Length: 254
Image (cartoon, one colour):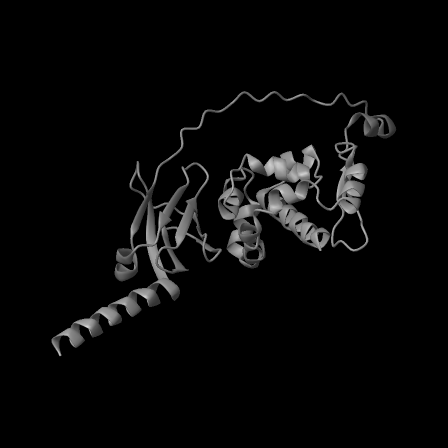
């Protein structure tokens, strides 16, 4: 009988822990500055496993759905980003305090070169450069390929992708299916989308996809996006572009 009771409690404990890991719960936390110990408002918290996010209030408080061992990515302009794991203690206590350290930012010299305008529209319109980038529309594909003055070889790349499906897209996407399936989930969460729309550093995109951010320009180039787009797009545009490229890859693969 004694062994049965021990076995029963062992099974009950195991099922309880399993339920915690599988079933999302609402956890909360307070984010403060490591240097000032003051609340950090507007910090972005993303659950990388569930691909949902939230922001801290003016008091540094947040709530988020998470399961045991989920990974949370915390970021805010001017602070070093932080990755934390949801632990048993956190779930048990329902809340925790997280400290962010401020970045030491060195401002670089900015050189402003004015356009020498004449005041005549016909002349000035030719002096100001215009990014004539667009995307070719291809029958059977949801999106086309970008072209224009910054991507003069795009048309040849398009034909290469159509007539030779085993192109450079396979080199990346063929090994990243699991990570890239997160893209649809990322687009559904407004907090994640708003965060990405306000960022240009590629850090959050890289964390969400599980890649190095230095790989992103290479991926975009293989998808025939121009250097101008890669350099100026925000993180949400980059994410959408990678998503479109992945969908094209799946169609070409078929």
